[in-house]
Amino acid sequence: MLELYQAESCPYSEEVRNKLTELGASYVVHNPRLPGDEGGDVLNEQTHDELTAIGGEDTIPFLLDREREEAVYDAEDIVDHLEEHYG
Image 1 (tube, rainbow, N blue to C red):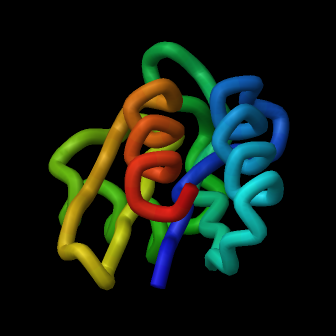
Image 2 (tube, one colour):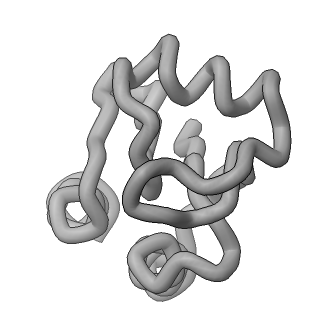
C-alpha cells in the first residue's frame, strides 16, 4: 500500500499525485499540515505525529511504500521511486 503525506495546495505534492494518477496507482492520502518552508499550520495532529514518527522529518510530500518497506521524501525522489517500482 502507498501512503502519501501531502498538502493539496503544495505544487510538489501535486507533482507526486499526478504521477500516481498517470501510473494508475492506488494510494491513501494524508493531509497533516499546510505547506510552508518551515512547516505550515498542523491540520491533523494524528497524521502529523505519524509523519514525523515514521519519517523523522516534518517535510511534505512524503511517500510511505509499505509493500517495499521504504519511505521517500522529496517530490523528485518520490517520482523516481514510483517510476522504478510501479511504472
